[in-house]
Image (cartoon, rainbow, N blue to C red):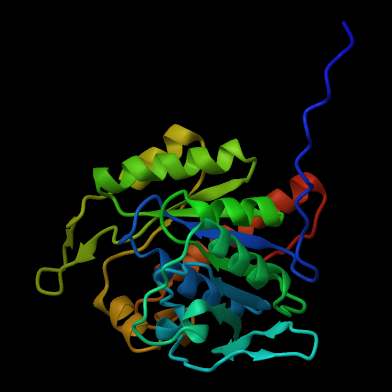
Length: 280
């Protein structure tokens, strides 16, 4: 019997021209501070001397413009390419800039695929060391479009220490592994709270479960970000704490995460012979 037709091959995922590292920031569930981590990570990398872009791919809840304190509208070129907005040293694009206000986005999968593809392929990002992509929570259409469209260098999974959050983190890690995207590591957000009165740590949502999950799945623990009202206030007022520099109030743990992510990307690049960055 003659052999049957060969199964169709998936198209090769192409990089974004000029972008050296494409980093997806993901979470298994909402409410874990994923966007806070994405924004502050991007700002920290920029403050450490790198060219950084930030793509807000959470089209249902595009909060990046609020956290960066900008309402600028992106401009279009004659050939219908999009020029990203410059904000606090970052190049940024978000559906929140194209659809401002409280009008909800009621889109199905094909529409989401179109807008995410346009953000990836039609935005003039220029030369970037890092393009940080803030994904919506979960493992849905936007994540699949991203993975199928471009070559993602690696993914950072954000969680809180609660057992409920960690159940979904495991799903996110498995999703990236099934599609051959390197999991750079886990970030435990809202990890602990330092009581201002007694000076002792209080584990409001628990502590250390993110590290246990990272160990169980054989991925690095990139850092723990404490519960600090200054981090929340910074995001609410458009002045994220990482923009104040490494010595800024509440920023230290975020810079630890940024350096850990940069180191992991350096390791990944070295393993495949790609570009290498070293942060002193």
